[in-house]
Image 1: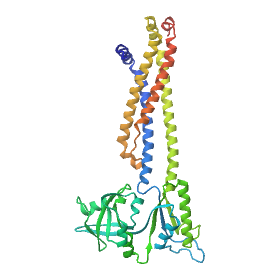
Image 2 (image 1 turned 45 degrees about the vertical axis):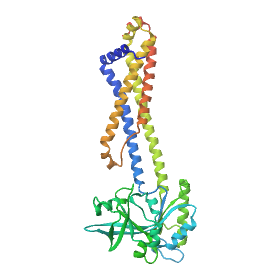
Image 3 (image 1 turned 30 degrees about the vertical axis):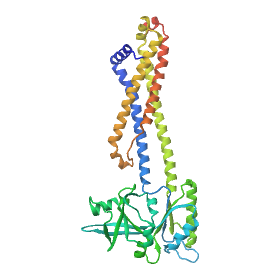
Image 4 (image 1 turned 90 degrees about the vertical axis):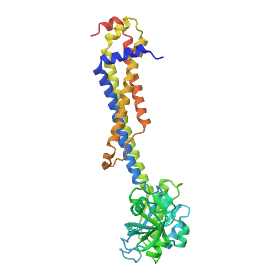
Length: 410
């Protein structure tokens, strides 16, 4: 039951001892503030790594060709490895069970795009419809490319949102004709991409259309694919290693040659990020726990000092008829009240500081520093419990002191 007299007495006690109350509150607020900032910065680093991998599906693999760096089976070093359409067939037949989505890719850079009086230069990619899954593109208007477009070698394109804004302003580009290097294409879709501005300045066209125009000898620039989500990280890495080995064998490349055929497996990056984040979480958790322990020790020391300082006061209360139970309850209630208010203040200051510093921390690779409410609330509850225990132990000891002894205490 709410006891108004008890609360009036508590507030009077706190107001008479402003310095003591302020020191107690500062210790608690600083512990929660530091805890909030640490976890906020840690989450900001997590967001940075997440953004770095946001542009593509996390189970993507890209295969690039280059020049050989070692002679092998009669071939000289420096030989250019050229992928062709038969490599697509080879990959799909060899890894039918492991491949989820697949797309060869032909890329043309610095292609001039014109719509009426507006023009700009963009990267055009000839791809399969599966490429949408590889890039995690989101269709905002219309559709992505289809296999019917591939079959007909249709002159259609899906453009990034920023391409639409550049060429069409506030108007929709859907259904309109744009000119790419002198050839007219119809816009059938507009997409956004979690990878950001750069990925929204691409133009995608049917692979067969682009290959027929720019690569008449069935040449392919690179391949993109996603492996089955059922594969674990280590299995995905083993899969890409086998893929690399077989592609090198097919093109007569020394197994030790690192330049001729390069495979980028996002599973490796994911594994590295997971390991880094695990270490980072352990470090933050260790520092956070250390901060809370420091706060608990601070509260405990202050409560012992407070009770010691109030020994004579408690003796007078007992002489006037106060029971040990009421004395213990009063001290514990004071402790809980100060801890809760100061902890909440530290939480608010920490959250406000993270929001105020958020944008300025991006140059240090910390994006959107924030902390989950339940984490900080949990830390505050821990401090409240610690404050309760810290108040109970010395209060119980003080409540056992005889009034005559307490009154003679200096």
